[in-house]
Image (cartoon, rainbow over all chains, first blue to last red):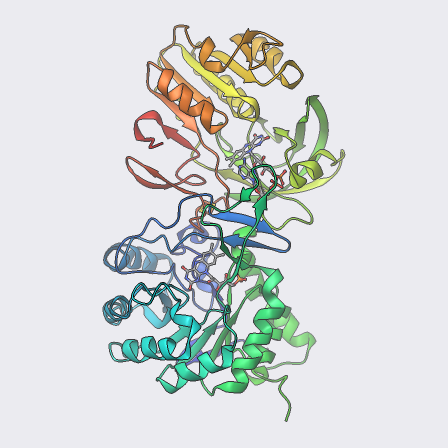
Length: 305
Length: 241
Ligand SMILES: Cc1cc2nc3c(=O)[nH]c(=O)nc-3n(C[C@H](O)[C@H](O)[C@H](O)COP(=O)(O)OP(=O)(O)OC[C@H]3O[C@@H](n4cnc5c(N)ncnc54)[C@H](O)[C@@H]3O)c2cc1C
Ligand SMILES: Cc1cc2nc3c(=O)[nH]c(=O)nc-3n(C[C@H](O)[C@H](O)[C@H](O)COP(=O)(O)O)c2cc1C
Ligand code: FES
């Protein structure tokens, strides 16, 4: 018997597989087709203070082995998430969830995280710092160590739940940003968010996505994500949730060998609604194949010396 | 939603760049106005295609070749396996249309109206159809609608066949309700010309096709709706252009 369980800041998950924010809604669509309690946890749609429509359509484009999205954080806002979505979600998912929080100002992060702190069903808070800072010319919080640290400190002051900072890969030195978050008190690091990209429609001679740019995710980004998790593992001593292109149980193991303590599965859920379940089910056999008894033993296992 | 694998029974051209594919497999619960989302080898995102006709164990799709994915579909031969998510979307509501509903389809928007026509007939209604195309070589399914017993008008934009002009140029008939599917400019023209209530079937680029990603959201008078899950069919009263 292999042991697939992992621990994130004192929170034990029966397995490391967590559907990624924005690709699993609030779980209902998936709960209709399988028992989502087989998952380690799941990260719900990025939540902001106010309700948001998001970007004008089209929001989606295809890419080789992946996709672009410019949903633009469509969500019902923190009030509705707490009063409506979380109670509904609790009926279909009985484990602690990951609350994914977004903001366009420090105040917004603080208010949302403070509110989510009181929610029993939330196991940890994942703070998405890929959003533009409206008070700083729209520069993303995640692109400088200083602003990443600023958000971390502010959020840590208002919640006792473990805080995982979710990093943007669209930076020159991911390790420096991770280190800044750790120094500012982060309990863990989550990465990667999507890589900025675009597509052009030859017939219209115009960008496919109305927003012009969108975030690339899916198998195409896996090697980039793996490299970044590797670098962050070398830079910090807090747990890492690794994601970007994960599609199979083998991908999960690679990500953990690079340094992830748990993983998130994003785009794969969209093209195969059973993807996360299939990965959970495939894990034990793959562990046996590679003679792994305890999954936690392999975290960072590819870093020698 | 069901994840299932169909087998291609036939796949042949029925008009310029337009193919009819007949599949065998699980069609449990499929309704007119819904769509299937097809996984094509070599392409990451699925392709949404409307249900054109369905019976126990058999499903017909009619599609236009417009890009790489539909080109690949056109090359599939008898016996090929096709992974599909079925039962997607809300489908047409047939409880409202009165005696004489009008079905208005444009190009690749014609197919879903065929399954709808059959359902309306089975429910004792007397539908009529207006089918619009660019040119004569693109016309399809006129005979099939007629064979069901529907009074059927065809319009071509270049006047090479049937009525010269757009579907709206054929709308001066009597009807109690309407259902329409086609390119957005056509839908808008139908919206403006129509004298009764009706239902519109929309298209949007999709990430998942089953409501999880918010990739396809549109604004309506009754709130934000996901075209894939809360649509693709919207009522005239709720549309915001
Ligand atoms: C609910 C619904 C029902 C549809 N029913 C039919 C039908 O019955 N018959 C038919 O011929 N066509 C139908 N379409 C349009 C069909 O989905 C597209 O023509 C097809 O996806 C194009 O794929 P491609 O790879 O050939 O084109 P490409 O342009 O190479 O595709 C690139 C990407 O864009 C997406 N895309 C391109 N055009 C459209 C479009 N019009 N709508 C949505 N996504 C698009 C593709 O799915 C793919 O992800 C329907 C679309 C929707 C949303
Ligand atoms: C449609 C879509 C919506 C997303 N929305 C969010 C979001 O709201 N918040 C967030 O932190 N990440 C969001 N992401 C990023 C994913 O959570 C994940 O970090 C990224 O897609 C990489 O993983 P993947 O390659 O497995 O998809 C979204 C991704 C997709 C594809
Ligand atoms: S395409 Fe994903 S919600 Fe509609």
